[in-house]
Length: 92
Image 1 (cartoon, rainbow, N blue to C red):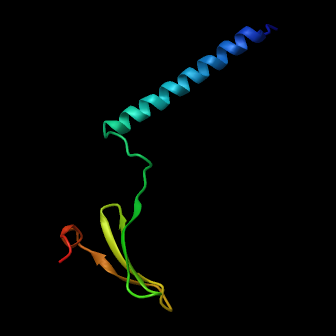
Image 2 (cartoon, rainbow, N blue to C red; image 1 turned 180 degrees about the horizontal axis):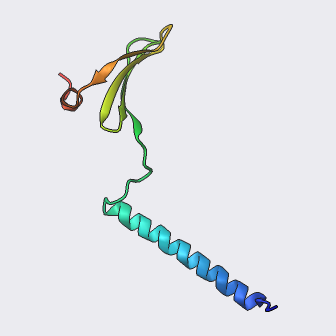
């Protein structure tokens, strides 16, 4: 059998690091160009307002839909889903 040796092992490791580095740079370039999502997160807290010392209204975004939650009382409750027009209009 043929042994690789230290030189071949170092060459293979350098090639692997080079390929992985190129992949990382390509992904960063795609993200900077807006062609790839950074993180792929579908769920985010858009805004939260304290109503009193225990209760909060929380606006959550899931994909392109918005959900209003009331938290902190004896039981958390879903206030409702907002239409895209309701979620886009500024507060009065």
